Length: 119
Image 1: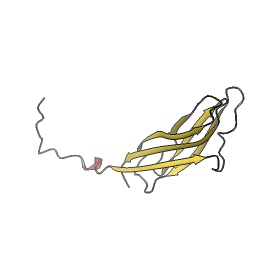
Image 2 (image 1 turned 120 degrees about the vertical axis):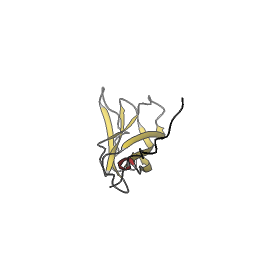
Image 3 (image 1 turned 30 degrees about the vertical axis):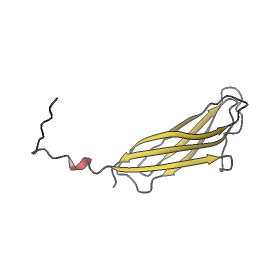
Image 4 (image 1 turned 90 degrees about the vertical axis):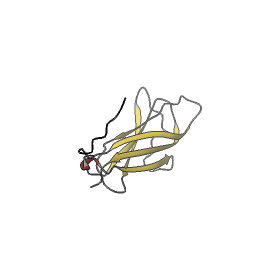
């Protein structure tokens, strides 16, 4: 396939520049409101939520990816763990760590990256 340059059609300036924000978050049993060591009876889930602010606000909610990079889970039960982002806004997002049943979590580390435009 041949791509022909279009000199009369410069890139749309509203799409540039793209700003990137990244971070690593670590939470454990010493973190206030940590509730992932408690065992949930039945199918009840436990969710730990923490607001993660961006260093500089974006002009609109950015695209955001969160990934689990480390954990410490009690080996006497099953490893049930979900990490996701919620409530994404121009100023930050909620990092949500979820577990259920007999899983006991001592520590979770997550990395995130956000793409968008600055104000």
